[in-house]
Amino acid sequence: MTSLYKNLLDIALLESLNNDLEIFLKDLTNKYGNNKFTFDELKEKYKFINIKPITTIKNKNKYNKKDIDINDRCQARIWGKTGCSRPIVKYDKKINKWIYGQLCKRKAFIGNLCKSHSKKLPHGLFNEEPPHRHFDKFKKQLLF
Image (cartoon, rainbow, N blue to C red; front, side, top):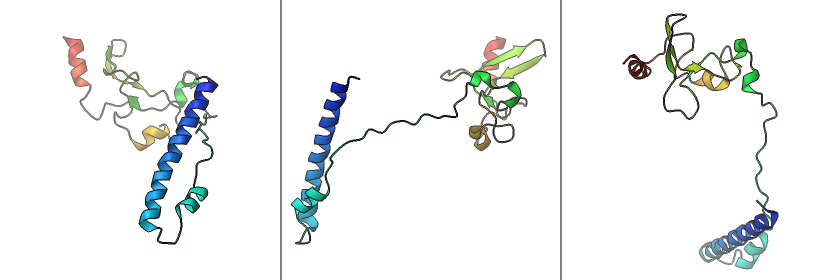
């Protein structure tokens, strides 16, 4: 975003906020003023002078999920790839076992789980059977 465009947006937003505030202060004065305060007093005391944008704070402790050793990863089962409506369901012929979902890619913090999965574990642990039958319908699709 160009700085001219950003400045114009800031000016328009500031003007809009001050107009809305003026309407609010007039209503407040008319309803509750009763010689206790005037519109001009409120307008002088409460006005928007400047707008400071809220900036996002970058997490300094970010780590690359690819760099996490398999032994340090969260042991929760996740549905599959982010944004994917189908879970990962496959049969591994080497170990003669169905694989449901995949291992969470986050770092384990509390025991063998990440912070998110320590609070809620909807698909169970990866090395155990799923606690529900949601994966079965995708398993049937692979069989036929």
